Length: 394
Image 1 (cartoon, rainbow, N blue to C red):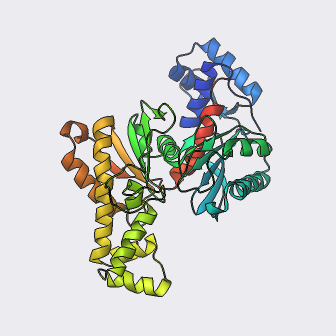
Image 2 (image 1 turned 180 degrees about the vertical axis):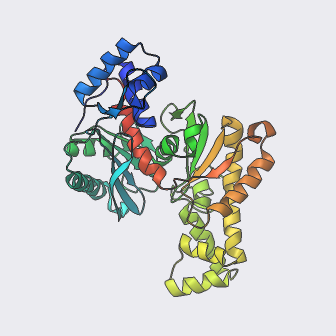
């Protein structure tokens, strides 16, 4: 497998263009990059020698001598790892980040980082064997919590007890002998949207990531914005009330405590115990607990208390987005990770509040939409994360 990096800035631009737009003719590449023919030929020749680029047959004729198509080499292969609170996903992609093989399995992050990260390495090895691959070009990892990207470690992740500063990046890199990068799942999801989702056509957008946690990825000027220490968009523990439900971080009234999966189920349990929802109470008696799926089923059946839980969560998310939209002025807001069956109900509440309370100049042309990639955004984004390192001039 190819593990070298582009040697010049022009080579980096060229392979990035092939990653994002697919095979292109030499003529098209020269036009897009603004390179003289001789310079382009020299850069392409070097990339072909290293295996980063290969010829893919003749291009469509534009008159005169027919140009050849170029594509990323078949030896360019990435792995994307998404560690969720309940599921581990490992994917191997080609250079254009199209999935070639994938494994998903339940995971319990409370076991600690060693067995979970070890299992991710094992799954990567299995996929490599299935595909007949040697060393990968790189591995990208998404975690559900704050990450020090420079060190490749989670930092005080409330959803990952016992994971604080565990060397996720260095552990995987040492086991596989390949470059590895780690980031939080909201940032990674934003990268996935930028590559293959609604965000592909926008240079400035917010990606709101829902699920066990709540986070926000910011793409500004076409580039992921992490801030000074990598914590930009870490909105999970913004305090909405002083006396709200207790959050996994130990504080009360956090956005995540209201709108994360545990917040939704907690509100559903309160409705069941208080007798406001016979449907949820019956399900609680039957199963002994409630899940987001139970809340979804009750809301879908027209249960008023379940609807109220969803509406309240949507309004609280909208309350936070009003501030973010006013401050960042994105071209679009993309919502990913919404529980299956609840996305449109949450979206309706979010839209109503944001459009009502934000300045017309900020929201007059700004759509708020559900991701069409949903959980695929983080899978693709993890591969995109490491590809940006691999395609930077070394």
